[in-house]
Amino acid sequence: MVYTGVLTKMQTEFLEPIQYYLVFENDFIHVNQLLNKRIEIKLIGHQCLSCRLDRPIYRQGFCKTCFFDKPFAGDWIMRPELSTAHLDKEDRDLDYEKKVQLQPHIVYLANSSNVKVGVTRKSQVPTRWIDQGAHEAIEIVEVPNRYLAGITEVALKDHVADKTNWRTMLKNDIKDENLLDWRQKLKSYIPDEALPYFIENNSETHLEFPVEHYPEKPKSLNLTKTPYYSGKLVGIKGQYLIFGDNTVFNVRANEGLVVELLVV
Image 1: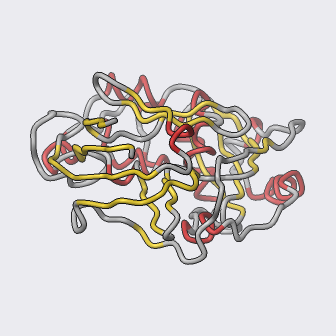
Image 2 (image 1 turned 180 degrees about the horizontal axis):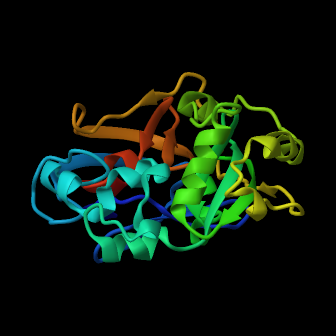
């Protein structure tokens, strides 16, 4: 079976294990069904996720022009503390920014390679944790806008990590942590503006990923440099496809690439 389309991050279902789907314009693939099968991936072009033109992808699936012009690639996406919609202040498109920023946001702790703090819209729980390859996570603050979540994350990352080590996550070289204890230890560092939104009573969420075999020394596939690859799929974790020869492919990092995918 041959599939052709533009890569976007895999869609997921929170089941045991997590269910993954690659969605193209006119077709989709239930990726879990490809485990233990050989897959061939071939780069055949580019398509910006915004303007849909065949232009080199700059970042986050966008061409350079769209990345610097469009509201959905503003700096506040990666740095939520820069959000200004609550002040009625525009960055690139105030209507869009109000729609995204002025909704409930979660500050959370997730354990993927280590315990880290992060921010996501409430509507993206637990999708965000799945995408990060976290095997356990917990909400610690629920605030009414992105700005409050951002300043909380900034305050907490002086005391806990805010990055995931992707190699450690993929090797599954991790240990269980008591995230309730972590939550209580970090409470005193939450800014006064966000402290009333602290979540006192909830439990950890645990996630199971469909992995037959974890790589000992994961090596990342870059389709721009290696436009053809063939390998046996042995796992899916985060937004990574894991192959039997230790090759891993980050689907989300390759958004906007047009590929031909052959299932042998």
